[in-house]
Length: 57
Image (tube, rainbow, N blue to C red):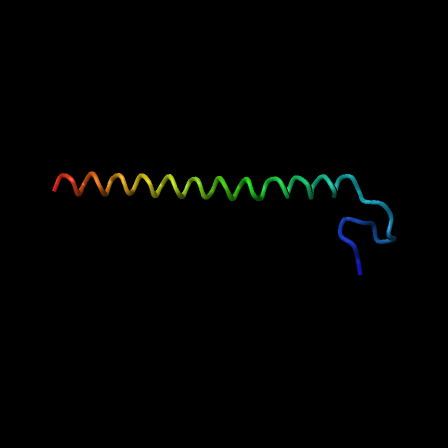
């Protein structure tokens, strides 16, 4: 079985591939949080509009 981020001959990990993995591990959750925050803010704006419109009627 091949171990991820190792050379095919079983040598040490490449610093570039390790760095890429660390960046990916940090960026994926950050992007997900930003996306979720954007969706939540959009939902809040729609809710405020809806309640303002309902008060006028």
